[in-house]
Structures are given as structure tokens and as C-alpha cells.
Length: 395
Ligand SMILES: [Fe+2]
Image (cartoon, rainbow, N blue to C red; front, side):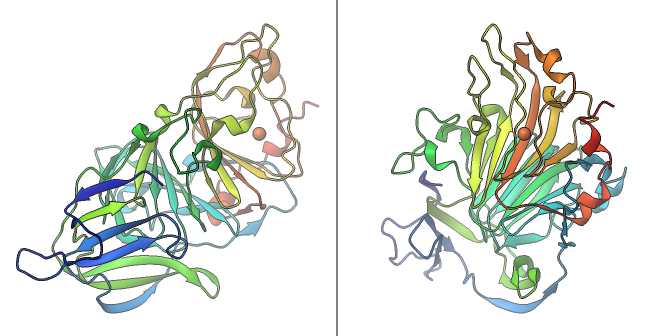
């Protein structure tokens, strides 16, 4: 994220002596991407951030993947993954159930009410979409207050925790990348400013509003990282509380963006999916279908043509409204559809005719297209409706 921010106290000149009130030096940390050649921030800690008193293993949630073989489009009912009161004992990090994944990205879902442990994903950036509920995301950069419709972007290795607030369970749709997640390059100037034709701009992005300082010793931080057999975990016991940053500045930090601030790009005839794109990572994109006026040519067909996305698997998470192209398929809020490469898909029978003359779609869905095939996680296997593949057939 190229937009410069500063929060709290920082010295006037980088890499110079910056002293605490007691005369000791703050510990300067550079957190940077791509080997010191891309975005970075400088953080000023009260204590040495490297100080560990213990390290032990953490059994991460089941990350096994089962190939989508034989190849099938699927309807996964994410709301069936968590039952009634189950959320009361779960948190948004350790309670995640893996739905889909490949070598580039993993998609999980969680319903939770408990604060998460302190957590750091050292594998890649996370983009967490808040379907429902509210939370404070406490990070070493400060606090983000988040709620329904927010994408929460957490750069790789950002120490943070999720603290649900309010009475409603926190429903989170989690995208864990093996890379960084950022606005589409085509919407950025050569220096990284969001361009005039982008569907959102810097004013729509919320950074941490206030610093977060906490005292404590022997604080456990759950670290997800690469291991010999794929994803693995460790618990680092930090000598001092990791939330000890008195100030930071730079272009790398967590932020939130609400989907309601995405200004849809519309046209006289059907617009292709890239107009709905909001973020991208390596080998995948994130798009959103927001409530919008639709195609206004007098003979327009507002729902999509049948499409064979030959280079990607398509994952739609249906958040709100009645998704017009899926009418009659059983899909509704809380559903996820997987349309894999190698199968041509489009509107369910009758959906085209029903959409003719309609000028507004009141629908909200988040789409992820991956350029490598997706396999099913244990959560995906557990909530597959088993019949979606035949939903276009009227025999
Ligand atoms: Fe599609």
C-alpha cells in the first residue's frame, strides 16, 4: 500500500537516536517487503521486538486439501459449518475451517465470539471479509474498528488479534495468501496513487486510528509459517508485550475498506468481471458484486453470458440479496459456489428471462478467481450440497 501514513511519535530523521522518557533508546524496526526493495514502515518499540523467552509448536487448524476430482461445480453452504452456540467457544484465528485452497491462496470461514490469540501470519497477507458482527483488530500499528462489509487487509507478519465486540457473532470469510494482497496495478499511478478511474480511492481506506500500547511479559504469539510439509505453526513467547510501538510511519500497514465504498462501474451492456475487481494477489484476484444499476441498453441482458473461464477457478461468496444469475439453484446468503476451469457456467435456467428489463440488482457477493485449480479443505467437504453440478439441467 503506497499511501504514506504516520501515527504516534517518530523521530524527525530515520535511523537516528530516539529516546524514551527514561533516557534509553527505543528499538527501531523496519518492516519491509521484497527484501528492502518495496513498501515498508519503521516502527519504534519500547522493548527489543526479537526478545523471546520460549518457543514451542502450535497445531494449526486442519490444512489438508482434497482435489476437486472428478471435476465438479459445487455449492458449499458455509453457514452450515458452525452450529448454534458453537461460536461462543471459538475465535476468528484458531476457529477457521479451511474451505478451499491451492499453492497460492487458502479460503476459510469462521464464526466466533472469543478474542483470538495474538497472531502473526508469516506466510502471506490476509484479507478478511467481515460478513457480520463487529470487532476491534488490535495490531502493533494500532487499532482498526471493523464491521459488516469491511475487508481487513493485514500485511504478512503483522502481529495482531481479533476481539469481537457487540452481541452478534463475528462471521469472517478469510483469504490467506502466500503473497501480498494489494489494489489492482492497473488502478495505480506509476508512483502508487489510486487513479481517477479506480472504483475507490485513498479516502476510502481506514488505517489504524490510534496507537495501542500494552504492558505485559511472557506473551504468547501464534505464528503461522512455512514448514517442511506445508503450513505449520509455532508459538513464540515474547519477553515483552508485542503492543509496545509508540509510533510508526511508512507505506506498509493494516487497513480496512468497506465494500459499500466500492463505486460500481456499469455500462449499457454487460460489463466483464474485471470491472468488479477490488484487490489482487499472486495468481488470484478478489472482486465484489455490489448493489448497482445494471445494463441500460434497451435490449440489454443484465445477467452474465455463459462463460468458460479457461484460466481460472471462480469462487463466489454470496453475502446479501438474491443473486440474479443463480436464481433457482438453491444458492442464497451464506452460500459459496465453485465454478472450476474446464466447465462452462452461467445463469441457471430461467434466470436470463427473469432479469430482462430489470434495472437494479440488489446483491452483494465477493468473488475470488484463482489461476491454479482449487482443492477442497475439510470445511469445504463438510458443507457441499452434493447436487449443484446438475442445477443447470432441466430434464
Ligand atoms: Fe462466473
